[in-house]
Image (cartoon, rainbow, N blue to C red):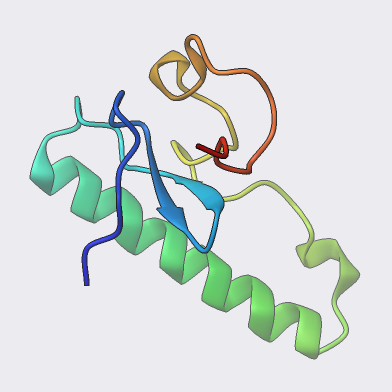
Length: 85
């Protein structure tokens, strides 16, 4: 299923909420590797938190920190809801 994308290509819209697209400057292999690392880190964190390990709360996988790249934020005011048109 394809979701509508904002004109600048940075976000896609699901039920009126903006979700950030992958950095278009990443090579497909690099994107896949980062995505694999991110999902592995999320799974490991979930397992640790369910086991009661509060030390598991830490930064996400390298390269995927929130708002880490300027392409994702350039020219976009804060907020995660799509503009109503």
